[in-house]
Length: 328
Ligand code: SAM
Image (cartoon, rainbow, N blue to C red; front, side, top):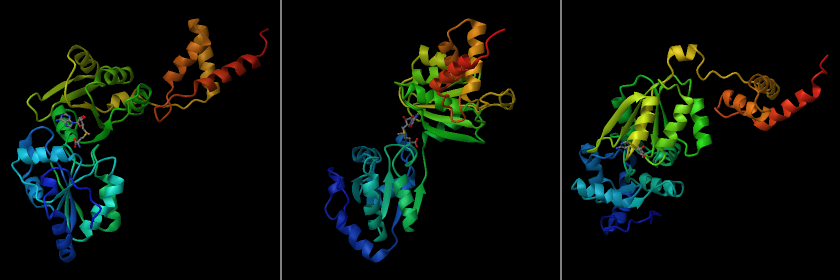
């Protein structure tokens, strides 16, 4: 017996699926894991290899079994193997049981809801454990929104970094954006429609307004659209015409000129230096020391994009005041 969870769907529970795995496994010894990309919108993007694997794999580990059967129906394919739910919440528990079946000879097809497994989707645990156990793991590649958006953005593709989803929280977003300000490679982010405006506000507060960027949405679908502009232009367009559907942001990396001008350059100052700067700012602009500290701290992010501790700077400012020599 395996410990695999049976799908409740008709195709997933067809009689004998499990026995077929076990008996074949006893003799073949040719098991493997195949990660397969599935369409991100246009079903015609399914590869011939994906179709064949759906028909022939002994086990299909799917992020969402209903979506798997929906895809199979649209491809007019019958999934003959056993279907198991394999998602972020159970992959740590499930991976080894599935790999036991692979060791007994099963071919396991691993698919996520859309695109490439492991790219902000389940699969990495399976890959790592397969590697640890010396079990063959391979890939049937195909659609992924990262590469589709990057290629359509018109921005440099020779070097890029994929940053996953933009952080949800305002403070984490700002920190993350600051840490990428001097990144020379093209930067790719995933984002959702309900957070895009907040994300763009924060992006525009950190990145130069004229930095080229693109927003790609609904790739491969009927309403596919790629907006190509600058950080300021995309912020405007998001406000004036909120994009719906699935989104990818692509931002050009820092130019040589920007880097020479010191964009994102980090000079780490200690609390006493920041306090001295804040006092000078408070005096020259006739503002409260608290407000001056907030400004100075915001202007001096640490290398990871986080900001120096305001309280420490405040304490340093207090002790500077106390130790200042009496004026003649
Ligand atoms: N594994 C997928 C891949 O390889 O692209 C990514 C899965 S992640 C959970 C889903 C996110 O990918 C969406 O929120 C969106 O940012 C992006 N995405 C997926 N399909 C897309 C599409 N057709 N157009 C634009 N972005 C898409």
